[in-house]
Image (cartoon, rainbow over all chains, first blue to last red; front, top):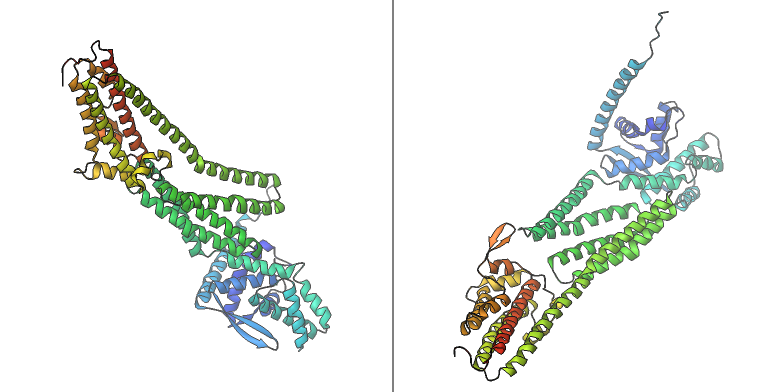
Length: 121
Length: 421
C-alpha cells in the first residue's frame, strides 16, 4: 500500500527498491522511520512511503543479502538500523544508473508525442 | 525531545502483538517506528493519546496485520535458485516417467531405470519442494492438510512405480496414497476454496473433476481384480478341458483293456504330459518360492509373479543343459507325436496332426523380426503366458490321445491292431 498525494501507486511501486537502496547508499545506516521521514521531506510530501510497503521490502532485501541490520537498544525498545552489504551497494548503483537512463528515455519518448500546433488555415 | 516511558512502550508493544504481529523482527521494527513517530508528534505539542491514535491511523484498518502479510508474501516468494531447481526437478521427472513408460511398452532397454529415477525425483524431490513452498505460504491451520495431500501424492507415485516394476507392497501404498488424497486433501482443500471462492460453480465442478479423476485412477488400479477374475475363468476352463479329455480317455482305456497298443498310447501321452507338467511346476516353484504341492494347485491368477518375464525366460533360455530348458518342451511334443503316429499307420496321422497343432518348424513374425516357435511363445513372455501356453500344449496332448483312442475303438478288430508293437 502506498499513500501518495502526487504520484500514482503504479508509478512509485516499481521505484521503491531503487529509492530505499539509493537512500541507504548515501547514508551509512538508517532505521525505518528515518527512511520514511527522509523521503517525505526530500520530495516535499509528493512521495510518502508507508510502513506497509517499507518494512516488507526491508525484510525481503535483508533475506536476499542486500541489507544488514544493526540493533541498538533505546530504553525498552530495539532500534534496527539497516545498511547496505557489498552486493547491496552494487545493486543500488546499477538500479540508480538504470533508473536515470529510464527517465531520460521516457522523457525523449514523451517529448516525441507532444502535440505541436500547426497554424495552417 | 520527548521520550516514551517504559509503560508506554510496553503498551504499544502489547497493542502491536494483539493486532497479529507474531514475528519478532517485524515487531521490533514496528515498535520502534510507532514509538519514534509518537515522540516526534509529542515534540510538536500533541499528548500521548492523540499522537498514538494519529500514528496508528496511518496504518489504516487492519493495517498492522497487512504489514505482516505483505512481509510474509515477499519473504516466501521463492528465490530464483529454488524456482529453477524445482522447475528442473518437475521437468526431468515427468520427462523420465513419460519416456520410461514408452520404453516399457516397447520393451526397450532402460525403461526400468528411467521410471525408477523419474518417480524417485518426483516423490522425493519435486513434491517435497512444492510442499515446502506451500507450507511457507499457508496459515498454520492448513499445513496438516497440505502435508496429507503431498504425502498422498508421493505415496501414490511410489505405489505406481512399485506397481509398474512388479515390486511387492504396491497395492498398499497406492491405496494409502489415494485415500489421503481422496478423503483428506481434495475434500478439505476444495471446501476451503469453495468458501472463499468468487466463482462457486467453477470451484465446485473442479473439485468434482478432481475427485472423479481419483476415482478413475482407483478403478484402473483395481481393474486388476477383474483381470484376476478373467484369469481365474481361463484357468478353470483349461482345467475342465483337461479333465474332460482325461475322463473320456479313461473310459476308453477300460473299453480297450485288451488292446496292448492302448497301454502304449497311454504311456506315450502320459509321459509327454508329465514332462510338460514338471516344467510348469519348476517354473512356478522357482518364481513363487512355494512348494511343489502348492504349485500344483495354485491358480495362475493368484501368483504374485504372474507378470514377471525375467524368471521364465531365465529358466527356459538361460541354461541349455538344464532339464527345464525350452528344448524339453519341443522334445516332449515330438515324442508324443512320434509315439502316437509311429505305432499306427497313416490313418492316425491327420488325427494326431489336427490335435498337436504346434508346428515347431515354422517361423513367426515378432515386431518385424522372424523368430522361431520357442522364441515366439516363450522368450520374454510373462509367467502367466508361459504357463498358459504349456497348459494348452498339455490339452493338445490329451486331445491327440483321445483321437487315437477313438480311432482304435472304431476299428472292427480293436483287439487286433494292424501291426503289433
